[in-house]
Length: 179
Image 1 (tube, rainbow, N blue to C red):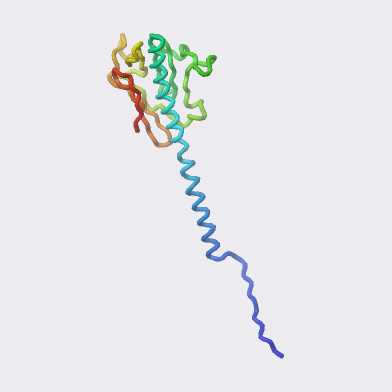
Image 2: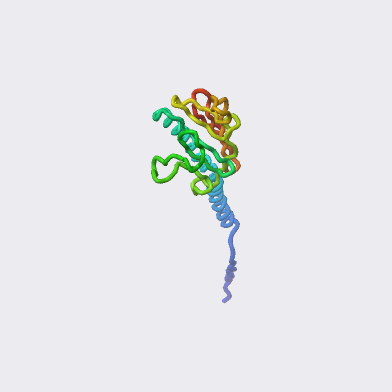
């Protein structure tokens, strides 16, 4: 007797559907990972802008509460700023940090790994790189001697292709953040 037997052909490899499922999974994973990786600079920028605005407010409130001049001094090429009391603006005269009293109140972006991608593009207060607040919280520019009322004050920070500006308003000393 002769039986008709079907020969079974065994093929090794992947079907088109299996390949498409794998590619879809890779595409979904990439769509999740890429925005997270690219937003690291923008997250650092947001943190730096918030911290800078708070530090400006701190200097202003110290001026009001202590009844003396406090200044925020910017070193844009050095990517840092510090807070001083009085009229000597050198980094050596930075006030003690309120949370770390043995450390001076200096914010150094390159040496702070949380803010290392952030750059100070510019800091100008009527041509000076320092803004001072008097006992009423009124901002002054130290470009002239003696210091004159501030007309315009803007600090521009950059990171990861994004730019944000922190403004110090004349007369009121109001601190605002804009894109």
